[in-house]
Amino acid sequence: MTDDFPAYVDVDYTDGEGETPADYPSIQHKIEKAIEVTRQGLEEYCNPAVMWTGGKDSTLTLYFINEVADEFGYEKPTAVFIDHFQHFDEITDFVEHWADEWEIDLVYARNDDVGAYVDEHGLEPGDDIPVDALSEHNRHHVRNILEYEEETFPFLLDTYVGNHLLKTVALNDALEDHDIDGVISGVRWDEQEARADETFFSPRHDPDIYPPHDRIQPILQFTERDVWEAFWHFVVPDTVEAFPDDGYVPESAEDLPEGVTMEDVPISPKYFAGFRSLGSEVSTEKTTQEPAWLQDLENTVERAGRAQDKEDLMKRLRDLGYM
Image 1 (cartoon, rainbow, N blue to C red):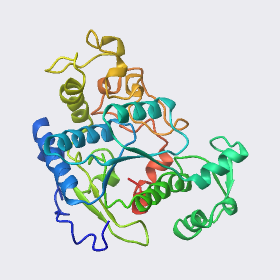
Image 2 (cartoon, rainbow, N blue to C red):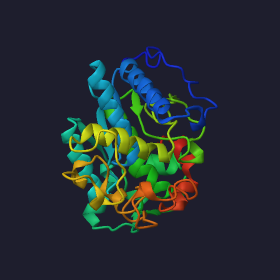
Image 3 (cartoon, helix red, strand yellow):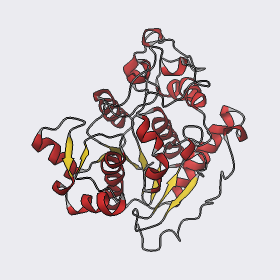
């Protein structure tokens, strides 16, 4: 990154202001906007990176990045995977497999200080970590930024301190280490109230909170239903040679077209198993046996299987740099 960021970036930070998914009435409208935002993101930033969780939204975003990079000759950005030490093994396997398939440079963002303490003491999720045992960097975040006063905090991802140290601090340290000026992420307006006012290009320029950068958000305009429509009618047919060109929506892993296995499809196996939103292994549950895309998407909560104490803190966490 050059010293004059963000002056060298020519983007409209108000693009998308006051809009909702209804302003993009068809899947084609949504895809065209995603391509437009992705192309501008790859063109305007010196060193962009894509946040990849292995979930449906970030994987769809990565698909658009691949398409735009191949079509217009851009270099593919690095994918940053936040390793918070509490992932489902299937998610890590999925990310590594498709990073190789799509020839993506994958880097891990980890809070190694917390991870080392956990390993050294053989901790399990929920066990307490003394604040005084942390590095000065982490103690600063706990005491001065979060203003947390307890002597210990639980080794759990979906809590205020846990989420901040394991995700946000890990991310911000990675942004600084890799000199990233644009973070391409797969957040959506309809996913959470805390994200409903986001714009396609969102500034994060306060150096007291995070390394200055912009968030580039190509799929804000997608609903959960749109994401699955895009996968089964565009992403999967384009990725899997044996899949019908006009798309097909399977009812289970056993209902895939002949010659296609679940491993061929760039969709996490956890969605086939009934999980609708993916978080940590210890705090995410499936609410039904049906694959995610067959569930009642319009009348139930997308993140119902996620720990709600973290969900209720989302606005505060986002102010500190969370996605």
